Image (cartoon, rainbow, N blue to C red; front, side):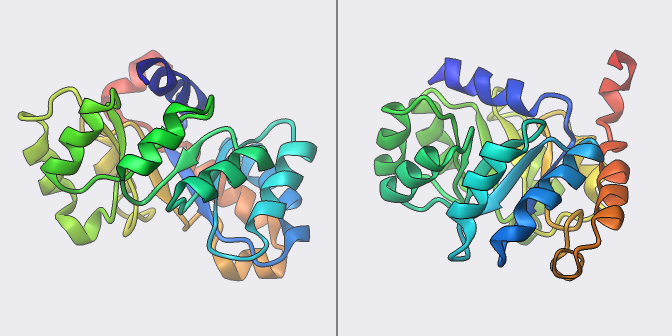
Length: 219
């Protein structure tokens, strides 16, 4: 598990925002992924919230070499397996279960499970995972909660998701235990539906410019 965590961190390294994407039309997936990658956000999470999701992952994995496609909203081992077979390079879940941990243990694809309680975080640590999705972030205490976790769970790192926007992303990224944030504001449904790839690329550029303040000297 620790090696898989390192692999996941290397996939997301240096990317402050992971776009969380809902694809309704498969044909939009490839130009969307290209626009996001051109804007600097190569790693993207396509959520399994629509019938088109798995086909969208397949298309991006096969056709957009510059993108790192992952699957989100994975709830069980069956979905984990389907997403991995579709070409996902990482898997994101809103929660954590023993069945999901077992599925991840048998796969080369790294898992980013969600955790919101100390018990869930301890479960992840027991499984050798120290990089977690903090979900739903704003609704569960947000930055104050992350600050409270920093001392008792000083080895854990998080990707907060839900309620994150261009307005508060930088404050989240300033927290020492935050690696990146997940958000849908860089690819809103209306722009995807309109096929406004130029505007999505511009939003991606702006999101990519967000860096953890204490890491700016590195690059």
